[in-house]
Image (cartoon, rainbow, N blue to C red):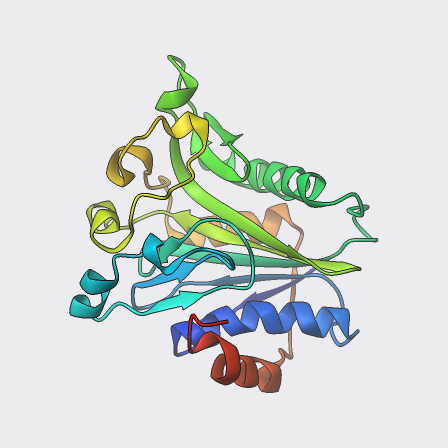
Length: 241
């Protein structure tokens, strides 16, 4: 597997690059599977592909200069920015025997992510559909989330990407993100700040654990710059798509 540690200048370009990598893989333009790692220098809200704009506090985001953008994958809205490491995996579904659908893909990737992160922290597990959490001995509803994840399937390839909170200002979540209409049962209607937490390791340690765990030991020399630029301009600069 190849790795690409690259943060582009704008939130739109960073979201577009994940999509462009998937398109390049589907077109046979990549040398193999890719793990991308990046971290936005500015906060921004990322709506899921079908998420209503109401999942963001639009007035507060506008007042604070927080962009609201949309990604190509499903799931609920998230907040990205400094202190939140972002990752993206572009995988050949045939090579990894991931032809059965969404549930199989979630299980495969999240189990590998857990194995990668366990040298850095104990008592972590998957909860809900696609969350990584710190577990609780008392009750599942006390588990706290540090990673949210989503995917997009193409016929022979998939994009799986998500967040790893490690030094994020959790108190800002409630200002810029609304409480989602649909919540996993284990959340037990907790507020953002009571529900999420930071992972106890730095960005470099987490990135290194992912690179080692996924055996992404080859740097990706060339990435789809033209596709990324086009997608950023025509799609990711707006939420209306």
